[in-house]
Amino acid sequence: MPMIDVIVPEGALEPDAEAGLMKEMTDILIRAEGFDPETNQVAQSVSVVFLHRPVAVYVAGAPATKPRYQIIPSVPEGKYSDEAVGSLVWQLTEAFARAEGGKFEDVAPRVWIFPTEIPEGRWGARGVVRSVVEIQAMLGGEQERDLGKELLAKRRRTKAIELIEAAADAARRGG
Image (cartoon, rainbow, N blue to C red; front, side, top):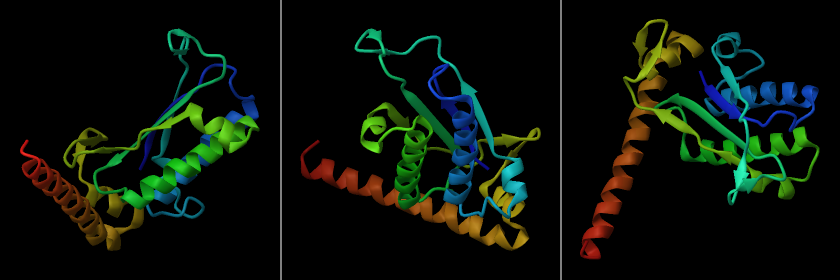
């Protein structure tokens, strides 16, 4: 159930290329959540792209000479593993290169992607707060409810280990 904020300057892409890019991004994000975008119509129906058009984009205080893009996919906590985030960033960057008709190496420095996990208990939809467990069951069926619990627990373990390692490192350095 990705919500995607995409910032694309007006006229940066041909209209057909931009429309294709929005669909491709949606499918990439649905796959990153572990669902098949071709067969999961529920996931398709709740995946939304908000296209934003900046009035101007500046680089080093001057108007940009080439388009810059920003993508902020938001999902409930636990939906993205670190591996999924890495793959997601690569695939979205490739999609922008294709949409622009350019080489990956030329387009990649102008594409910023900030995958964002919304903390458990902070995803609101249809007038209520939805848990990752509820969302997983809604998208994948009731048999996916336990997977939602596992995903959240795994993500929280990973975050806890990172925090403990950072604290231990800071203690070793005396800070």
